[in-house]
Amino acid sequence: MGTITAKSQIAPSELQAKLSSGEDVFVLDVRAENEYFDWPIDTSERVKTLNIPYFLYLEDEESVMARLPKDREIVVVCAKGGASDYLVQELRQKGYDAKNLEGGMLAWSQIYDVKRVKEASRGRTPFDLWQINRVAKGCLSYLMGSEGEAMVVDPGRHVHPYLQLAAEHGLVIKHVVDTHLHADHISGGRRLAELTEATYYLPSADGQDVTYPFTPLNEGALIRVGESAIETVGIHTPGHTPGSTSLLVCDELLLTGDLLFVASVGRPDLGGMAERWIHDLHKTLFGRITSLDDSIHIYPGHYGDAREFNQDGIVTATLGDLRTRNPILQITEKDRFVEEILGGMPMQPANFSEIRRVNNGVKDVTDAEATEMEIGPNRCAVSE
Amino acid sequence: MSTTAMKTVDCRGLSCPMPVVRTKRAMDDIGEGQVLEVVATDRGAINDLQGWAKHAGHEIVAWNEEGGNLRFYIKKGN
Image (cartoon, rainbow over all chains, first blue to last red):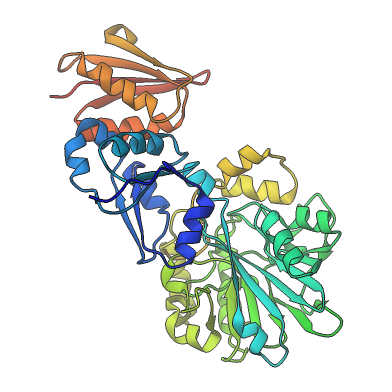
């Protein structure tokens, strides 16, 4: 039998540090099966997860305990940290090294993992690029830096990770961009721009109902970071939203927002006009995107599972790679594309119309309300 | 419906897992086919009581929400 460590709690940041360092973790998720399948904590192979709802333990302690390892740490997870803590206290009395994930999935949804993208500093125009991953939701955002200046793209609701990263590297955030009006999470863009006095950009077609001022991000918009180093050009890529605009950086990489992911593409149905937006989506993917060079590295706004990471833990692939690997990019024929995508749309993200209202500036929410509103995975892709 | 309940469990103000923990204990004290009334305020109880009842072989015969109170009627299985 293993030793029981003194602590009965594990902070979300500690769990993230373990996962980030490649440590194997054993997770006991005690939520009801439907909640677990909707939103598992991690899908990578290094995390072994067992889903046993806590109420099964109430009915039959023995058979639940028989399924748990006694020789390793068990991280117990539930929605808000209540049921998991109850179980942790029980299991520890029985000799298991159980630890409660403090605050449960709600707290886990606020964790951001920051990874440096090494390729960016090896290109023709070297610069610093970080992919910031809101792990619980699969939301990706970016910070690019050069010559003391920085640009942030699609920041999550919590502005602290971006402020901290910029400060650590002596960068002043000058530009904050939302590639589109988000429906799966509350954007931190406006707040981050206010705090840093940066320029805030949003595509004008997505800003029609927006109640606050922004700088339009449209086709051909040129944003420079640093005196000469990073040159970013807006490319209008409608489909997920009418305004969706990708950013071509130094002709070498493309931040695609929610247009194109590694294993899927952005869904066209979150604005209530799927029949119209899907035509844009097809045209963009097989017109505008096809005209770009295969060697361009794609950096998307989301991922669905751990298979979309490369060996450095970054979610990216070259466009050439996606043309052969991405299943949706294989459906070139338009009628079939429309039929397959509209016919097989997965469940929509939780509270997506309310989230759009918050991002439009029409609705105000407290921090706690925002956290509740953002539960669940991003669900922005047309396939799961 | 409430007139047929043998017993009421008041879980108002309690958060997860206590509504299910208390309901389970109360259920142990009533007989097969009898109905337990549960009042709760934690919305997580909706999914959890349903999941628990299904696993434990009980039937939620009705539930409603009124003025922030969730009321469940659960029939004990065998």
